[in-house]
Length: 86
Image (cartoon, rainbow, N blue to C red; front, top):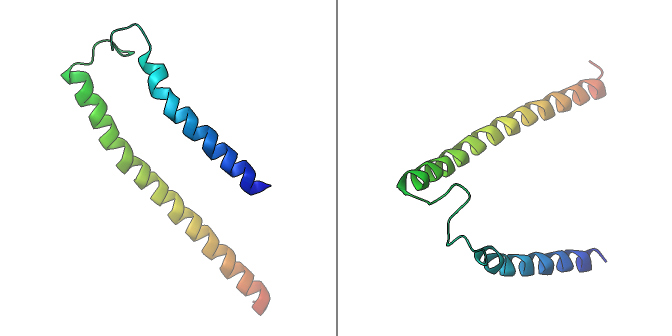
């Protein structure tokens, strides 16, 4: 049952991605994006945003993992103290 649901979701996502490009290209704006014509300045700032996004996400997720590991170690130490009777 679960395998069928996963396969159906994957097939649906694949079809959605396959037809998304043609649906987005069917507009009549002559290739102009949401912010107007894409000149060098827009492309540069967008690319810098993408480059900055990934190190920021990696740093934040690493900090989150470190905090969760410290929490896990405190729980394990408390359980050990309870079991040992200290």
